[in-house]
Image (tube, rainbow, N blue to C red; front, side, top):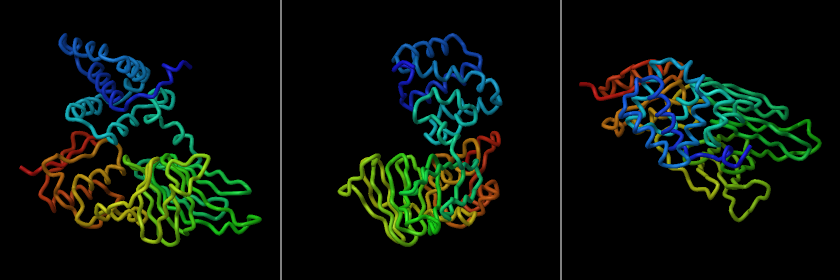
Length: 329
């Protein structure tokens, strides 16, 4: 494969290419639209490359429900958040197609992981050392154990780990977790790790977890940072900092609930959207309203109904895959 063919693309450029693919495939393009598309295509070499890769998903777009595709187009006109774009892409991309889109859009490692959960599903997995790994919605992990160490690789999503005693090993092996942002060493019986758009979140219940941001083959103690009982850190490849609570109980999903305390509606809806396919969003004019309460994740349509009633909102179902909360008229 040539360097040009394997080039990673700016996610914003890929979003634009997806927009044009949906617009041209599912809507009759007039002469003005066609000229605008040609102009976009010629503006930058990356535009043409992104278009070629999205075009390779032609069969998947063809099988996508036309109504959903049109709603995708409507959403793109108003600007999709990154998570929404990824979720829509996930509805139509196969392994072969999505692999062309670039690193950030490639679901291959997660799709081939040893343990996976689907959207809205929570799973419990027992590892060989006795550790219990609980996968949240749309999550994936691999485990790689040898005689010297235990390694859990978070491929996507969120996990709660209850570290096992490793009773059958010749000696106590350290427990490590690798994420896209770094490596963690757990000296804690229970902790949570979650991929976010802005980094990896670590929360600890008892004991200590040490984070090595950006670490790959060497671990620099000078750049490490530890989180202890009840602490939360957010880290990227460049460093770690304390995570400021936005009102969400990060452990709630383990009990099948989403629990909020004076949480922005926009943040609450973004969190709830992790548990259903398609796009769930709220209008900007209501995004700063506050939500408090504990809601059952098993029926997120009921969650929307309860929140809408308490805040005097309207829930608009354009399709099952495109839902918006707006101010009640």
